[in-house]
Image (cartoon, rainbow, N blue to C red):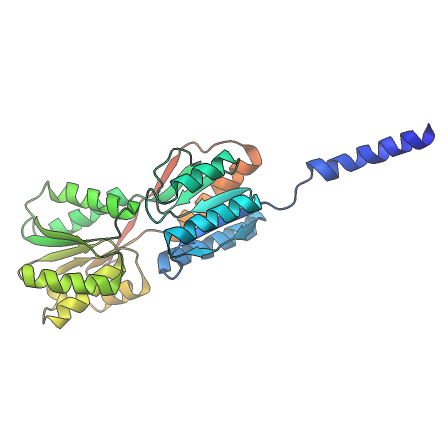
Amino acid sequence: MKRIMFLFFTVALLIPTAIFAKGPFTIGASFAYLWHPVHAAMKSSAEKTAANLGVELLTPGADSIAMEEFNLQDFINRKVNGILATPITIDSLVPAIEKAVAAGIPVVTVDRKANTDKVLAHVGTDDVEGGRMAARYIIEKLGNKGTVIELEGSQGASPTIDRKKGFEEEISKSKVKILASEGANFYRPTARNVMQKLIKEHPKFDAIFAANDDMILGALDAMRAAGIDPSKKVTVGWDASIEGLASIKQGELSATFDPFPGEQASRALTILVDYIKTKKKPEKAVIYITPKLVTSAQ
């Protein structure tokens, strides 16, 4: 009997360790296009935040929808505690996200939204308001007259959709006319080629709004090649990249927007970890950070 009682108490003492104790949380973070400064900044911020929160962070990159899907399936297989994701398009990760949630893994999207209500939260820049801010800046600089060319990002990406929506919504209230709006995939060489074509089609333009700095820099390349002085036009980008800020300092680029990528990633990871620990959902399902207009005067 004494031996049985001894074994009973020994097992009882081991139960908390075996069942209730938990090691560090593991979060899978699939950041798209880590070669891009914005997403690289997100990864760096998430890693610092993870270290402060005492969680393990897996950070594979994804340069395609197939790689994104692979990452999320791998996270599900590893039974991570939570997932951060930047979906390349609004629909690209919906099945994978919903599969993860069905498996009991909460998902928070960062920067780019997913077309599903299954995510715990979305943290990103207020791209619609940013588009409006870009339009208001151009309208003011042009004295509420003239023409503008718009360079859109990659098709189906939420920043492309939302920045375009806000920009065109605000421009429509003014006397400024949009001459053309074409996609350039957030990519400098593509933007350079698109802008070369648009300069031939619309040689008399007053302003350009591009949905990221890579594209506006490509547009500036095309303008210089065509003998157009960029400083004589109103040009607006997005990302506050090192090259974009340098171009503003040189007097060529008029303005860009800081989307605060580090803050986006840090807040998203904190929300996810808090939920894993407490099961308490955030007060808002969508958390927007207002972008900051950056010019030579700021």
